[in-house]
Image 1 (spheres, helix red, strand yellow):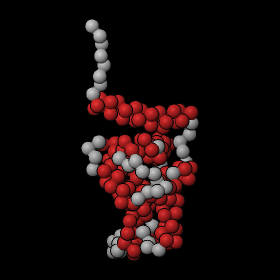
Image 2 (cartoon, rainbow, N blue to C red):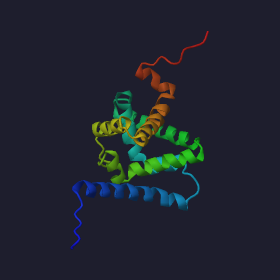
Image 3 (cartoon, rainbow, N blue to C red):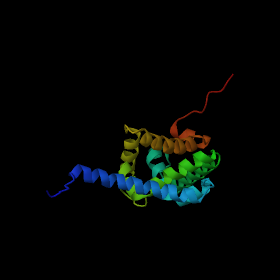
Image 4 (cartoon, one colour):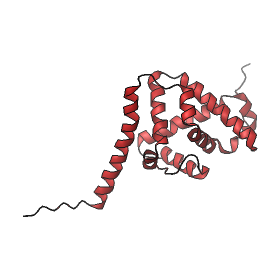
Length: 176
């Protein structure tokens, strides 16, 4: 009696996807085991500048200034504010933010999450679709990834009173 192993197409795809996720997790976990210090905000921003600029552009959209120099200056301000925000987070949360950005920077992991493009050549409508796919996913970890990015970008953008006028926000109510 000869043994014949013929995996189904579905099983091959599943095993391949599981392998990509395992490789991505290993790429995040192994360096983390070597380094006990959580990453600094400025370090994360420098190493993931293009990724964060693309995500911020997609999330903020028309709230950003229209002309290129003002838009670039506002994105630089948002990224600096995100770095400061990350520096003020507890060490474990900073590590988790670093893990999230590391996964989003790793193309196979990013593809499993729903975006296979490069951040350098990022197409804003595709990134918006990717982000909303994370937000609307039935998988809680994908939703958490979206809300982490959302809160970092929106929180730092709208925390600056100079952005309120352009978005029509009159500011917080004044107590009498």
